Amino acid sequence: MSSKVLKNLLNPNEVNCSFILWSLLLAVSINFFSNILSNKYGDFKSLWVSVLLLILLISLLYVHELMNERKMKKLIDSSIKSRKIKGRYKGLIAFVSECKAKDKKEYRSDCIEKIKMYKISQDVTSLADTPSIGQTFKALDYHLKFGDLKHCWLIYSDQSGVNVDVMKSFFEIITDDVVKVHFVKIEDPNDSKHIKKKIDEIYDNLPDGVKENKVIADITAGNKPMTAAMVLSCLKSDRNLEYIEQSSEKTLIEVDISPRLMGVEL
Image (cartoon, rainbow, N blue to C red):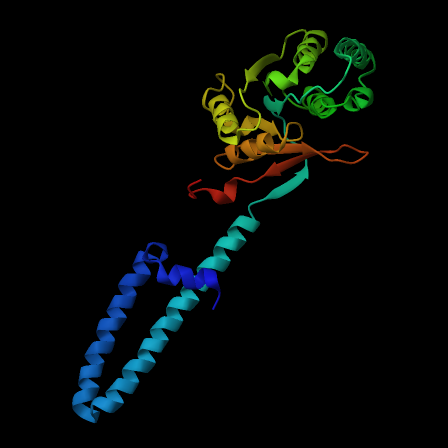
């Protein structure tokens, strides 16, 4: 018997209430038939029959919990789907990573030149190779070309540094501010709970005409606590995720983790 199933059997809070009611009914029935058998065949035979029925009851309870465990595992496993992105989203949530360049002035100047070249060539390759924020440019390139991007929320911290200015320049040069960019500051990039709250606030205050299923969150940039916060925030409702493959193709992958988890409290 697996330890998890045994734990569920011994924990009354984990056992299905309806099954307990049926178990109690069966226990009462055992007692009833035990009394009848005792009067007809004697106490010894009645005891053996009662023991066998009790073993049957425990076996049924174990099978019930085992099936529930497998059903839940299948539910969770089948709830995660990934595919090459095809959706047309009106909103994008992304992180602005920490800038690690030593010469911030030169770094910003190089980024501005790449942005200007991108506007002319529409080739995102050079921008996508930019250290720390290349993945964000790659995501923006897709949603600007093949989506209906109207809003972009960029989550940053003090460590993001000059990358915030670079992203502001990108929207000024490329979109002429047609796409509304919202900069959302987090106080601690290592506090997942705080970051999740900020992301939830974005979803809870979406602009008119923008629904949750038309906003996608990118988990490629940022550190591990930031990624964890994004995933946790997107475990409910119709909130989808995306990431950039860590390969030469840098394919944008969409992850759907919510529909089959409806009704599960997170």
